[in-house]
Length: 311
Ligand code: NAD
Ligand code: UDP
Image (cartoon, rainbow, N blue to C red; front, side, top):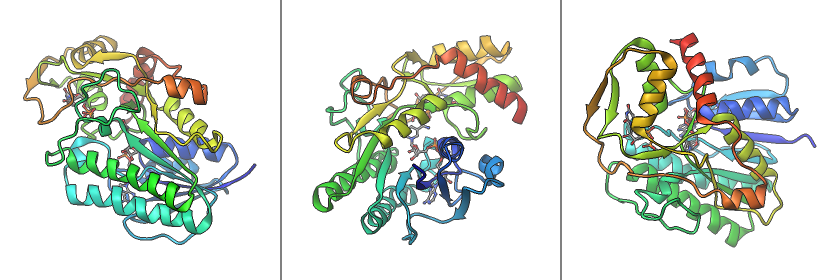
């Protein structure tokens, strides 16, 4: 059935892929973005589509429209960007959630929150299951993002309990792919851009910290499946690829795949950088019949091809 779907942060990396998919499925898609880290160029290919509309709007302010579903993705995701204006980052997560939940309440729309593995902080449970409450430093440099996203989850569950709002909460783990901003600061884009330019690969710490990388197409399938799941499947649900790599292994793989002669240059590990991160996706497998299909090497190949074209 054709639906009116709002995607906040729709001109960003993940949001623009979600717009592509939902426009192709024939829905009426309204993309709302303040272009802080996203850009019109990410949705340029959709501008001529009759069922796509783009609107500049900051979700820390209320929005009065009519919709059936809301994907709330607006929020800078790269540590470099979310620490640039930390007060605005928390406002986007918290005021943004209040505004979008208010919109869901008024219209009766179903609403999905793009939460994050950062709610687990520097985790002491490994791999991370959804019932783990996390280990977050509330006053550190990542707090603006981590606590903002945690508070947004609280708001989603309170709106659900108090007002009966139909919610979904996805805890997204590190996702990568085409349309990441070349200067985004996240590890996959940094390493690929550095390798392609022959610049030093900036390895933070000794590279023994781990991450689990999910290709964007897999993640978008997970988000849509969660939104379409039966109404008792509200989450939180981890969405990510459980294949875990050290950051050093990622650097070596990018160097090999690009054939680069870039040297590795070590830098200080940022404060509160999580030492390990890997999703337990048992809940997503059981409740959504979802799991990622694209291994790191395939996803990196597509991402390298993309950056080779754009930089
Ligand atoms: P991104 O920075 O590319 O996209 C975020 C988008 O939100 C951008 O287009 C930005 O301009 C927009 N935005 C920011 N503040 C806004 C505001 N106040 N009003 C309106 N628009 C605003 O990041 P992304 O990787 O596409 O992440 C999308 C969502 O997924 C974010 O909520 C992020 O927290 C979450 N997430 C992403 C990852 C990941 O690895 N990519 C992991 C966990 C969670
Ligand atoms: N990282 C790195 N070099 C870079 C960027 C990041 O070694 O140029 C490391 C970073 O310290 C972290 C991991 O890569 O341990 C993932 O960082 P990213 O910013 O992509 O995401 P995070 O999972 O930390 O939010």
